[in-house]
Every structure is written in C-alpha cells, then in structure tokens.
Length: 236
Image (cartoon, rainbow, N blue to C red; front, top):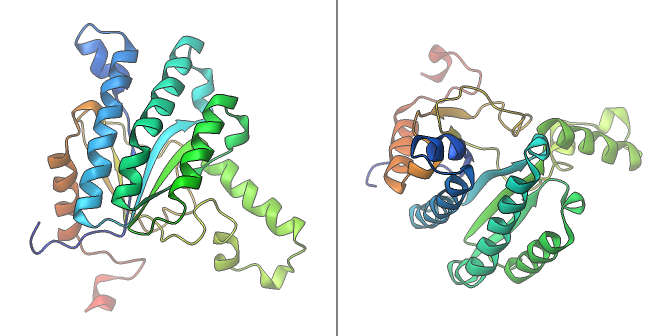
C-alpha cells in the first residue's frame, strides 16, 4: 500500500465466529474453524505489510464459561494451527509470544505452545502475540504483584517500570485496535496499553475479515491525526 503509514502494532478482537455460523445454519464450531483460517491470512498479510507486532485476542478468562464442547474445539483448533504453522512462522521470522496465564491451560495445549515459542524465540521480523487465557485486569494485577514482590520503592514505580512487568513488556503499545462483528467495547483487552490506541470497529464478522479489510483499517488509521492527548493547536 503506497503512501500509507504502517502501524508498528496492530491488536485485534476477533469477534463474530458464532454469529457467522448461525447466519449459515452451521454449528458455532464451524465459525471458529473458518475464523482460524482468517487468522492465518491476517498474520501473513501483517507480515507482508511490515507490521512488527500483531496481537490476537484468542481466548479470554471469561471464555471458560462457554460450553465445554466448544472450549474443547477451540483448543483443538489452536493446537492444530500452531503445529501446522510452526514451520511457516519460522520461515517468515515470526516470534510467538503468549499474553496470559498459560499454566491454567490443558497440558497438551501448554506443551504445543511452549514448543512453538522455543522454536521461534530467535525470530525478529515480527512478533505474534496470542492473548490466551487473558484478562486485562488480571494483567494489571500481575504487574502490581511483580513490583511488590521485587520490593520496588514507591518513588521508583513509573509508567515504564509498570509496563516492564506487563505481558507485553518490551513491545510498543498498539497503534490500532480492531474489533469485528459490530460490538463497540474492549472486553477487558489491553486496558493499560490502549491509552492512546486508535480504534476501528466494523460490522463484519471475523471469518469474513479478509486481508483487504485489514488494509482498509490501516488506510483509515493513516488518514487520522493522532494527538496523544494534545490539542490540535499544540500539534501545529
């Protein structure tokens, strides 16, 4: 995309798999399966565009309340995706990072995740964050407890020191947060990191969020004037 500023970090709330399937008279699990292929295409497109960090909201803490059969399918899709894409991730120079409490995940899922993370740890072209068993509030509490356990003095608790204890430590905050399916909320996602993120909401369900839709979101971001809390006059 010529004359377009590519964001360093794109974060996506992949929503609408179930509704996509319902519209077609299919079980919810079919929506999740197609959604996995969408995720694969979006990862590839971000890599092509030069996006250095991509975060996908894969499974939230709240998702444990879903039917057990659906959760089982979600984990199967995740592990199959990682097994299938391990070689491609390495070839594309994509490092896998998990945001969330991995130790609460089923053993087989943890094993696959940790294996792919080890295999891609030296990749430097792009970072793929999967927010998995994730909660923004939980991440903030995790950071607070880490600072307390290290005995950090009150005067030494800065935004930088706090950010260093988040699961996104060392990464830039998202420039752009995309949510599909028409919902207009954050759903406990990257609450600290999104302070000056730009938001892009679309009615398109996640399975239909093809790479061209990603391009459209990035073009809109490029046309916005980001102010970071400053007034328009201050920017002139």
